[in-house]
Image (cartoon, rainbow, N blue to C red):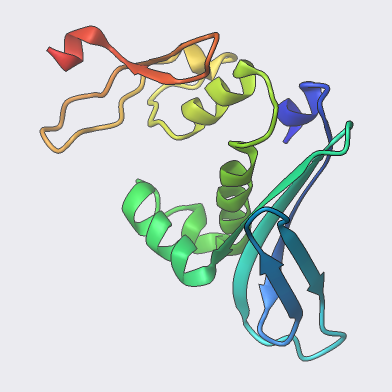
Length: 164
């Protein structure tokens, strides 16, 4: 979130849980809408998560995921799903996931895109600049997937040696 704010383009970022008894509506399409009115009591279990961002010039975007969608994502994509923050603080990890998905469409600098790409990698060492640490994410063949980020577009570019 800090990197998004530092871009100078973002005015506000929020991520929230939606509970079963909350009033929650959203629409996609040419005029997207999102409305969330939390229940005053007896909210029930969490059913959805959403994240919203607003730019200083009036632009906005949001992403909504059901709890089941977040769970499926975590099981498929997270190496720490079985014994990590997904088990100890599921709601925080779910909001982080939906927030990262929402911010993919925000007008932010490539530094942010690179930081998000780095956040989704596996590292053995801790340093002041984690982007400089090698990605040790394993493929099915147990080989690291080296990656770099195009500074102009923010796209992840596979290491050419790994592609051969």
